[in-house]
Image (cartoon, rainbow, N blue to C red):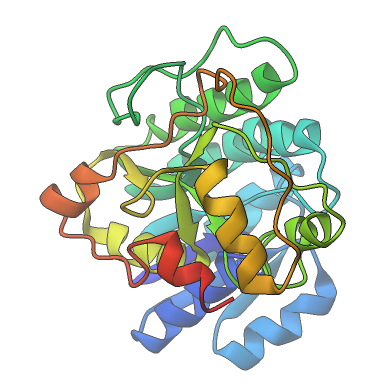
Length: 284
């Protein structure tokens, strides 16, 4: 297939581009960095250099690529600014969807997140509404997610992948990542908030498999949602950090409920290589 990967040199995009090239697809990779174009060529992909905020440039690159599928892996997280990431989810997705529609691309696969659901007691399924009435600063993130998903669903065929919190090489949970530094400094909090994790390699593999999935939203996360009381000590052990301090129990944030992956597992036959963060953390 001819596949256009937006965000092809990002955390997931670079792994996905490699997978797709290895499977024999013709891959055009969008990056805003001219310096990374050479890396895409070496990988076997065709680079397209443009900023996703530049509507005219995105329209031109998608038209030139004439893809059968557009895969949306755009993020803006390098500075850790949720406002910048939400702005890209809104404007960048709008540009990408309009470009795909103008080029008569029938299908889009897009990255979203699995922690934008409204508060509840149990891990959220895909039928759980998004937390659209959340206060700031969470509202900024959720509104960006809602705008992305609404735009993508305008495509004739579409799949939205609601990823769990990514860990593994290059992520904030990597051995020398942001949360590892916080753990070594004794600053990683222990509470009852629940997280659903996802290894970054499983995230890329799911995007490749989703090329043939039916339209809809899919939670892509591991099998074991866990509270910080469970995963933080294990994470600290895996990276050689001191154990976290004991913290009193208290009510969790209602939205920090984790996500349910049964649809991906049972209906779509998705099988993560890392079904639990327990095993995954042990190899950090």
